[in-house]
Length: 109
View (cartoon, rainbow, N blue to C red):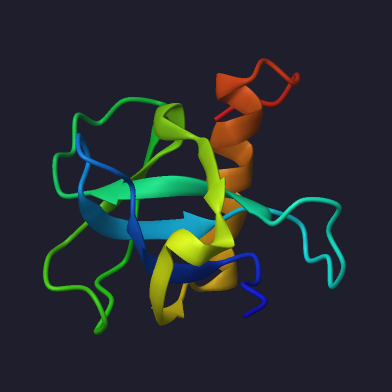
């Protein structure tokens, strides 16, 4: 299993968040030093904040969703259950911009 940036996976996030869709934001690395991936969780609760990116309607998701970049996290690849699909490039560009804003990397929304 080699998840790629922009792919949406169903992931086991543990007891509090349960199983939910996440978008992979880790760089593509065929031989990472650790078996971890970075992800941004998807949610249906849109608060319209600069930390959220509204996603286009995607056939592989049941509801309209947003990427919540404040929920950035890492988890072992083994907790990824199955690939759901891939985000359009434009959505990933917006997520990267929102991550830059959230982490204060000098980018604007």
